[in-house]
Length: 228
Image (cartoon, rainbow, N blue to C red; front, side, top):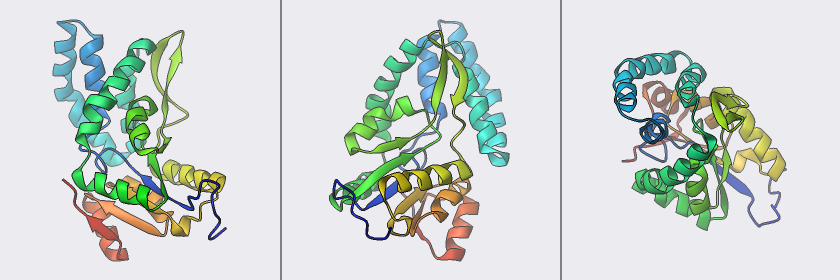
């Protein structure tokens, strides 16, 4: 498959985590944005105050099992009308997410685009929030979606949280569909949970790595960059 030319002229891809890698964001940020618009006072204030309890619990879960942490966070979408989710997701993407891209990330993405490298966002964040960013960079998106029943969000993501080995599997499947040789592809991630996706490609890049990922990157001689 090496050197196989894609019909568009693109022959490799850059698989990029988003939160913490390309942007100064977390998957909690869109939830807060949505809740502040979906809930009336005083329920909004009570929910925001509850983050003092939920936040540390989510961080603890994340350290043990990122998929479990993602499920715990996404449960808070339960009961949100899908019309509100879709409308606010577009606004969040345009007004918040695009403004939080690290400067060096913009430069690297532009270099990929100019070099004929297909940009692919591989993220645990919901797909609907990525649409404006994906349109800006002509990127494919590999991200979970929120389950909706009778127009209401259930708080369950489909098909599953995109973490760890799931991201790696999705990258391999995407590369196979598009004829990309992973030995010629790039991957960008910031957390130890991104290790499987970084191991998939010939050009791994650790961005703002956490302690465990930084250690592995140093041991393997991977490129490491700190973006602000």
